[in-house]
Image (cartoon, rainbow, N blue to C red; front, side):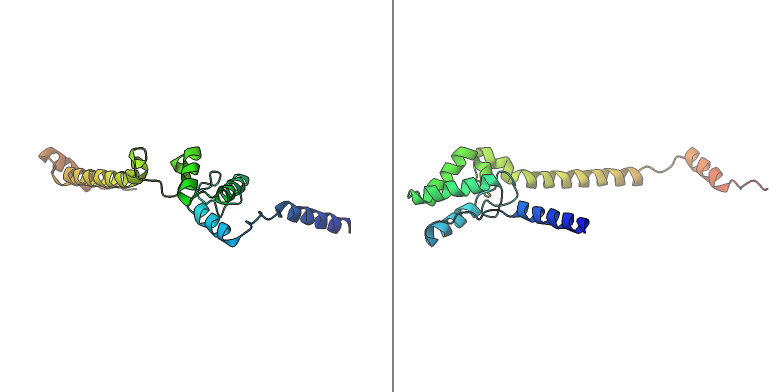
Length: 155
C-alpha cells in the first residue's frame, strides 16, 4: 500500500513539474497575429533549431514579451526585426540578409559540396589510372606465376 502511495505522489510531482503557466496573450488578436508572424521569422537563441514562436525556453518567452511590447508601442515589423538583429546579430534570423559577413553562411555548404565532389572525382581518376596504367614487369610476372603454381605440401 505504501509503495502505491509513493508511486502516486511521485507521478503527481512529475506532472506538476511539467505544467507551466500559459504565456499571457496580447489584448487584441491583431497584435497576437503580428507577434506570431514576426517570431516565426526569428530563431530561438537557446534551442537554435526552433523558431521563437514554437520554443518553450524562458528566453523565448522573454523575447516574445519584448516583441509584444514593441508592437504595442507602434513599431513596424521592420523596426522590430532591426531591433532584434542589432541586439542579437544576424544569427537570430532564419533567413539572414545576403551581405559580406553572411556570404560564407549562404554559400559555404555549396562550396563544401562542390569541393568534396571535385576531390572525390580526382581521387577516383588517379586510382583508376594507377591500376590500369602499370602492367607487371617480366620479373614480376614470373614471380606471380611461381606463387600461383606453388602446390600445397602433402600431408
